[in-house]
Image 1 (cartoon, rainbow, N blue to C red):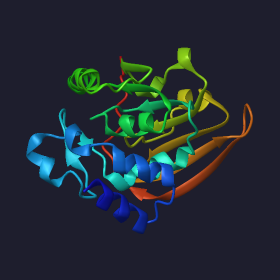
Image 2 (cartoon, rainbow, N blue to C red):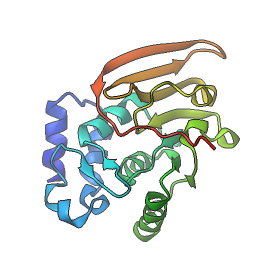
Image 3 (cartoon, rainbow, N blue to C red):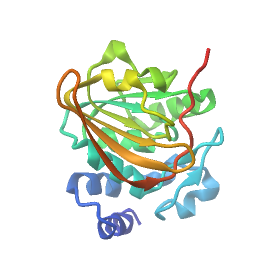
Image 4 (tube, rainbow, N blue to C red):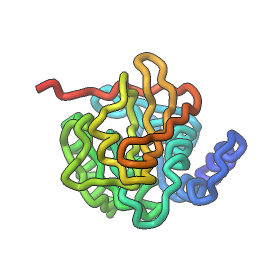
Length: 204
């Protein structure tokens, strides 16, 4: 079923062979509620705990491909969620630092990662808007929720040449790629419409 899913994503335009290999390898059904397991390899999003979703596989593959990962790239993930996207990044040998602000999901995914042997560099309960300045700068930053605006803290934590992949918008989002060209210069590319749960900021 994972092979069939990867074939579907290739037909939809996912061309990066490493990303397709990750889709073939990572057992998505284990990241989902058992009631949805039979649908795990459909190219659809499904509900998980805390009113969040596990992203559509096409979206996971699309965002991952935009990072242009190399082994040992240092990646900041905003929104751990079910951990499926994290596992895809780990399969590609990225050093992953992941932030989740929903305590229920953070606890559940932390336990699951230990059980399954997934080892991100850090899994943090915190505010994704702030990023993780003490661990930066990063080769890539991947945001898995819709942001009404691009957090400046995330832009500042990118290495020169680093890539920020973020869906921007309120109800519908535009997938946006920022490539840091210098200390103050960023190249921006808009890459189509997607729908995500909102990126929530801790106002405290």
